[in-house]
Length: 396
Image (cartoon, rainbow, N blue to C red):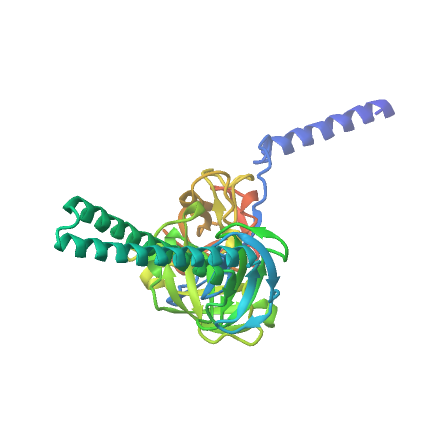
């Protein structure tokens, strides 16, 4: 056979083999199936019956007040500065008293004048009454003397009251401490003119100790009780701790449906001051916070997807972040449960507590089930996944 004919026969043989191979392959023409997405998972554990919600708060004195003068005037002297201590009755500030002293002297003179007039009118009345008994003066003259006496008595009473007010104003030029304590703020300076009731000093008392003020979301209000014991941590004092007693649970919410809570610090550590920040750990009974028998289950904060989107796509609000909705909306979220065939399904949950990377949720979940622990914004319901650190095998 000539050489060119051999080459043509060889090409025909190769083409036939290629056609046979393509026709017999079961994957011919089918698109390649994408591999499962690897995810980090978390196995849900049963709650231990106690939940800790961690909040930030601020220390404040249990007894505190703002001091001011009841009368206007010019500050003559401030006897204390910020942080200085004082005893009850100490004079903390003084107004210039010259004007009030002059007014008191004037009122004293007016009282003396009224007393003199009263003596004169009393004598005149007695004289007119004696003459009337003898028939020397008319009844009309006696009535006029009696009226003049009554007017003089009224003027003396008015003069005495005016003197008492002037003497009181004179004493009010001295601002006295209402209790033992210290100065937390000074709002005026010497030579400054102040109006009546204008704040001059803010002071705190040593008598009632310290309190912590914080706020809790509406979902936790029913889980707290007045008199319950919790814990306060003070970062500025080397994370010193103290038990705290819940003294007040507000009945009116602040912004975002958060209710004010005040706890009394049972054993204030040395160096504690009003205004310091505090970490508050509220101990909640998860069995009490559960409703209709639904237990609270701990999950990582990174497993939660907040918002109304139902596919877990990027852009959902996460970690309690709100986008202008109600606070109750921010408490509704969902997680992505990993089924036994390693696909994802969406499970709606209600977030009851949050703190330090952990949340307690209520929903159609059970201990032992596995959910996506992080990276939920990159996967969606119905997607096939594989488990990080578990290889290709399934879990049971």
